[in-house]
Length: 72
Ligand SMILES: [Zn+2]
Image (cartoon, rainbow, N blue to C red; front, side, top):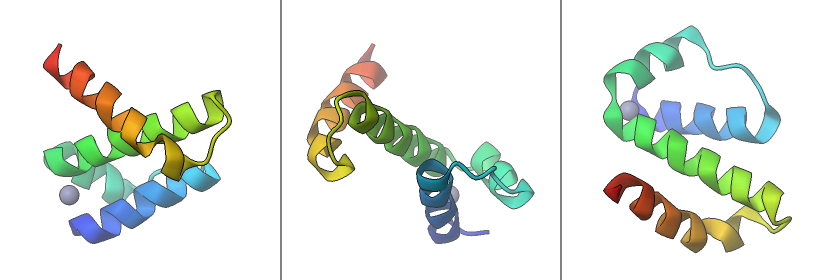
């Protein structure tokens, strides 16, 4: 599995609540880029459900929180 595939699967997981495949779990364990991507996407999803706004519009907010979170 490469990062593009991983990103696609992560999107599906977050949008459709599907379970991560074995390949994705293995990839995530070894790829910090995809781990960050997943956490960032999950944060966006969570915020958008929380404040009931489309994911696109909460993206800047998620980015701000993500930076704070990483800096702490
Ligand atoms: Zn990756």
